[in-house]
Image (cartoon, rainbow, N blue to C red; front, side, top):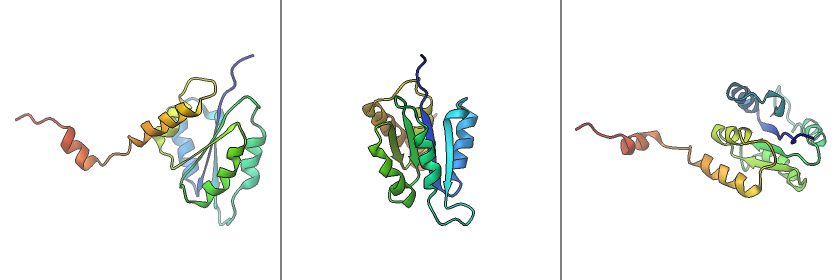
Length: 142
């Protein structure tokens, strides 16, 4: 029996999730494990609970499902955070591409929570004010 593949569910306001999915498919060959669900799309004023729960319901017992959301205080994250009580579900908010890409590219198998926290901390370092970064990190030829 082979290792279980992790699944990645991106749930955001509007079409940000679809943008993440498209970009991840560009960088990885993991199309079948990345799912995007846009909330409050096409004039709908409700969270797509049925779609999210359908994905959760279909996760094998010994596999991980990462749910990525956009805003810590946002309604999408508030709704998705209720799923952390499922031992197979990991919810991460405030995502950036460096974070999601790092997790998708991790070798197969479940990722321990401490490793996930390290990946989050590393991804935070990818947010840089380039105006000061370039001034402090370019060597002068003079």
